[in-house]
Amino acid sequence: MPAYPGPEDHSRSRADEHPERRRTRERALSENATDPAEADDDAVLLFVGGPLDGRVEVRPARHGEPPQTVTHVHLHDGPKVVHRYDLQPLPGQTGVYHVRPRAGGRTDEDDPAD
Image (cartoon, rainbow, N blue to C red):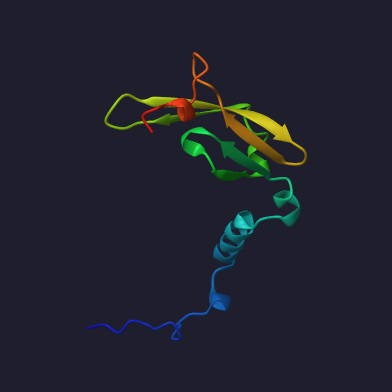
């Protein structure tokens, strides 16, 4: 049975690694790093009402401005249930998505089945 090196037993160090491979690994690590200045521009989005009530989403700045409307489709054994949330921007990089009332002025909170 072959012996497998343990965590302390390295037959080859990274110093012996081929320079191109080392640059590729370092580039991959730097692309995944978060720039602290960029993190300040991330948007914090809160959801109020409907099935997403209470959810907090952090949208990275690299994705641009948050959409004005978010559509949530819930699929289950019965018919699909669609909820739309409209964005109400707040000061800074924060916004609140409120569930849009259904046709006829009803929302999920008005449903007596709950």
